[in-house]
Length: 450
Image 1: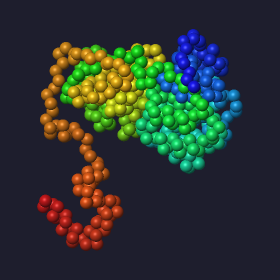
Image 2 (image 1 turned 135 degrees about the vertical axis):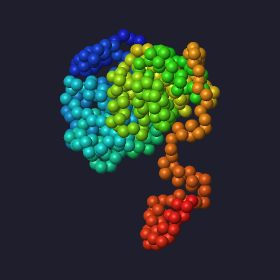
Image 3 (image 1 turned 180 degrees about the vertical axis):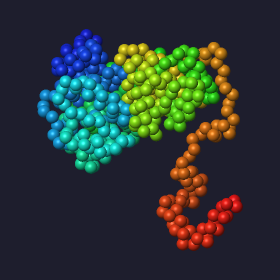
Image 4 (image 1 turned 30 degrees about the vertical axis):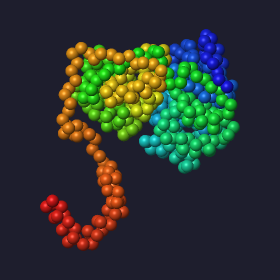
């Protein structure tokens, strides 16, 4: 059953929200609900299963958090290890953002909440779950670990939310999601939210949602009109110089830059720092504390540029972010929609800039086909000169060094008949050398001569 968007003027009181929720919204100066909130909050309050698509930054977190909090507030609190509402998110950053919203909107409600994710010790999370929580925000992997340890009880679960469901599928969480859902009560309300929907998402909805209402505020995979999109044609060697010139000459004070790889993010960050631009990188190899410190510094204005990969940036909520730069175009066109959705949020305007080489043209065409619009091409800034191509030796120095595991895998691939030395084989070799010191010494001398 499809629900069409209507432009009926209303405020949060008209949506049937409890006075305590309306009060906190007023204190945060949220006056008028966004289209996704107008359409979904009444449906969630009515207990409907929901499949909702809206552009990033349209307020979809509040669209499910507010009615869930109202539902939970009417009936007691969770008992020991119980969870009454579960929100699954693909990344730590998004999980933290959703939990912050739960805490903020539930300020006047006597409800408990927690957030769990990997990359940190599980002990404090187990302690938080021990007394029972009304709302739990979690990443799938860590939640499964905790469930296997008996730290969480799903028997009283009332609501399941799959947030950024398309990203969870892209990241390979489908098996974890199935294992989690199989442990949940069948008599529950299930909500799926995402900026984009694919055939796989609709297939997932068919499996887990019962006669869901469908809300699509904008066409699938569309980009918001509040974001001015542009493309600069530049050589690969000229990308860093162009970004540096744009940041300095146009006085960009807060820029979120996307790279395709973690190593690329680190390299770009080092180059920007050498140019006097305060920068930091966030990606999966960074610790949770390092990522949170970098994000906090960026929000406070201590950092001019935050360089991120797609996964690390998922769920970043930065008020009034003016600029997003695609240093590398994403390999998956749908990621472009998510990237530029970091700006132009909550009614504010923003700009996205893509640095495109000749090799990137197929990716750009795929993005324009997906979004059904032509991205404006801009001329390079006056006086810009791309540096000469780097010597091969210098490029080799900048390439990330492979780990010993990667080198062994590469050697095995080059010589299929030869097995890479396992830990057990290496121990056997050391044992043989210890048993025959003379042979071991001879081998060492031979290696020294070589």
